[in-house]
Image (cartoon, rainbow, N blue to C red; front, side, top):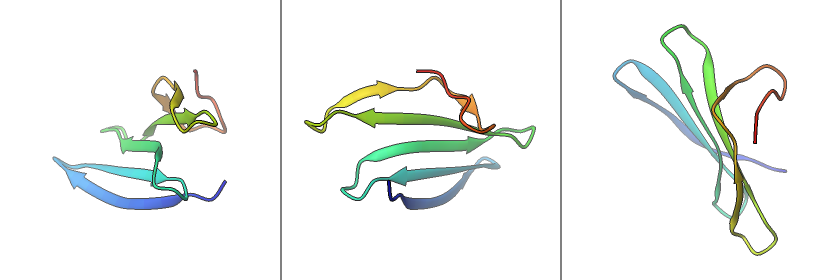
Length: 67
């Protein structure tokens, strides 16, 4: 899957990033914690383009997300 990044934003000292698929749907949102870890939430879509699953927030450590 090809991802497009929406860029990093800084709000109150915390960085965030949003990733989109090739048709502009949000597929990942990340935010840095005060400890320096990145916390992500992923979104999966079905064939009809509707949200199928949204993960629980997780720290990135090689695909440790929870649906």
